Length: 531
Image 1 (cartoon, rainbow, N blue to C red):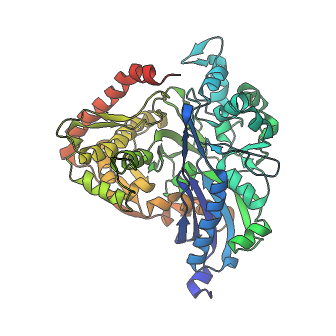
Image 2 (cartoon, rainbow, N blue to C red):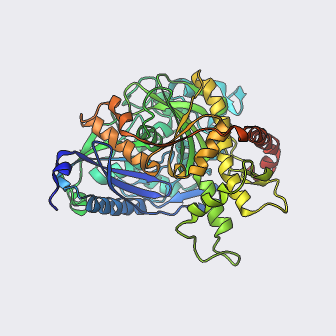
Image 3 (cartoon, one colour):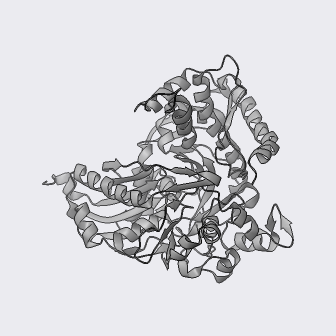
């Protein structure tokens, strides 16, 4: 296809985003325009005993399929695609052999089978909340994180394999995070960066751009150094696309591949939250509240920290709350459209549009119905691996419309709780938030957040492709095409939602009871779900 003059004058990047739902790919211009995108769904396997896995073969085949579709539909000549960059979910491990092929499914960030091993690792002579004080101080001082008691981090995943799947552990040459696995499949080079190895808590994060593992941290966590990938600088050019992969994708084998990033960093940059303290709420599979900050800091009591940003000498507030949009997906798939004797044959394509309409017709507060969104435990602002989900205060007058709105309101309540802790953490108030991710496609959800949090919510344009756009912007910066200061101007706000004062009283009351419900349910959660 012959490019028109406007296409030929631009420069392009192929961005690949691997979330829990599967890979997406897009061809993106240096003006931040998504020329075309495609996606492929990859299911999540829920296993007994807290296991959650995904097929990395399906990730790779899906990534290539999505990339080919995006390139073909973009109208951009392949010679104009200058680089490839990947972002992904993290706290997920892919064990690969010496040929770079997975030896088993990837262990997902929702997987809690490593919990007993993490709890053993973190114990010391004198303990506070289950952590040995000396160990905790070392982890926090050097990395900003500590292994989770719920085992949902990469350290927990590795120790689960070491103790319960010894044959797989022995076969594993390297343990990779998903973005580094995709980069390996693209280039043939096994690598990682300070940023992508954050979940292993093995790199000293006090200095931005560290490229060596820390022996103290390696020993503290009992990690096998020989099974960890060598580190390259953040945003490094890892290599070029393998000839066979280039032929399959239809791009030049000279196309450079840039070291990947995690999806939280990509979402912040792709939503324009570049300046320090510019707040972002992101609803994808998970629920994240974040902003850039100029310092490294940790609040272990509220599971809140900062992590290295791909932006030089900057850090990103990391307030990962756990289940986000997955809660609404769960409700629709397992209660409304379940494929069983009571349910329907399939979920309709417009299921989320219907959910929006249902929620919109219910008054604020859902007639007193509260949904507990902790379907796989809670993280920020209070880690509790035993917490679970459910509806509270249903009555004979409750309908599925009330339940639908209650699911949406629950995430806003959790963001309000997290916001209160985060404001103390950063030492200032958030005057408003950008809103991105698939959840930000909903005007109803945006308004609910404005009303519950009491601040304006700025809905990002094209919010579902925020991570793709963010990765591409990082690539253009690395290529020397865009300065960091230009990036916010490439992101447009579709609409700003202002708080409705008439809903303030009901949401203040509902929020207080949401907090009480979490607090008073702890003993019940422990009795039902503790190992």
